[in-house]
Image 1 (spheres, helix red, strand yellow):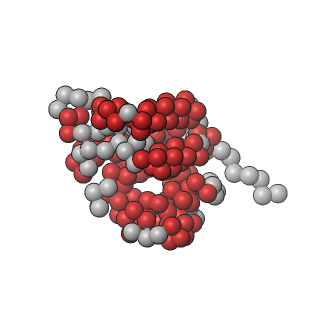
Image 2: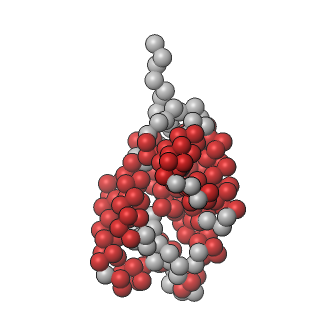
Image 3: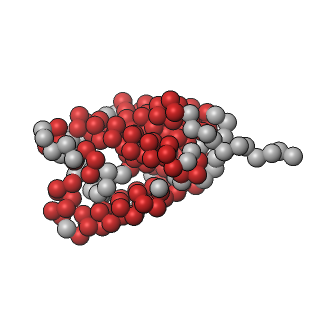
Length: 197
């Protein structure tokens, strides 16, 4: 599932970077709530953050692998929370695009996995949470990494980050909270922890 979503997102994102009319036709705009409903979905497949935003969003999409919860719950968290983020975006940032809100849904799976006692330490998770915190606090790359390293050790800082982002009217906070809610409600089967013996 990751490979398919990655390939589609990469193809439409590159096309949107190369042809501005593609981004204009697919991004989230106020028209999405006035008859152009497809924009709520298509905004997840193009990027408005240029080449750097495209590369980072695709990298995080690939690294928050579906092995954690399986393809079905990965898809539900990715698109359920992504759509929640897009809907919040109509109120907080009416024009925009990017799959970062879908990645926030996947990060929500990670939060619930941490709460369930699953030990995780992928660098993608460290930097993703750090980047979200940096967006709110305006810190640099070093502090983003430190914030991410702290956040991955416990679920509480993730909840703080989600709450702060949502309080700042950042659609990523809404998506992260939706990802947590989806994972908590569906209770995916987490992989068994390794035998300490």
